[in-house]
Image (cartoon, rainbow, N blue to C red; front, side):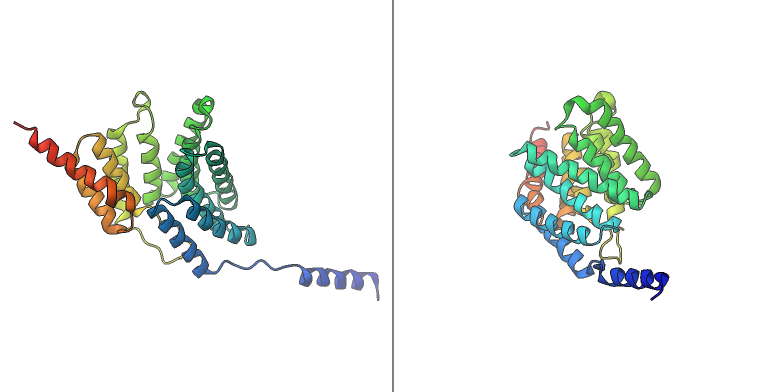
Length: 263
């Protein structure tokens, strides 16, 4: 056998022997998404971790998928607040992991606005673990959400993440319930028309948009708007335990109490 033929033969042997990355089963992605939402509905971080593990396994098997990296980051974004009250070290680790997965998604798709917005949201969230980095992470978070809006102006999730950043920002820096309410109301309006035929595409946050618009309204003492927003959130996701058991009843009680004190 000539050397050139031998090298060609060896190349083919290696190529066919190497494991072939398989695209994630759309049903598996859909099931993982549903498992994550169910865990959020029931405020169950252990179940969130299980859903996250599903996305991570699919992402590891298909590292070239920006969407799968994104979904791991979504699970991290969901998980971090639930852990931050009980285990800040673990919460910080998952928050950083989410940023890392966003970076991988953005490297694969530099115009992936949803991933850029999610990175901004996670950066804002990470300030609680690195207070000394606020003057660095804050502007980076804002810059990422601003860029995401230019790339995905019709995404309710992009506006939701921007609104949450504004809600948690000190008023002296342009934050607070009033400016955040405008952005969150826009997220809620976009959520009503948001849909995708792709089972792996971003489609979360519809009830979150109304939920947080309602939270901002409560902070402004606009209890009627809050009750309406919470009712819409529950209509979109009847399983949302936080809205059903706490937020909506609080808004209804506040509305009654405020009416009773009027002359």
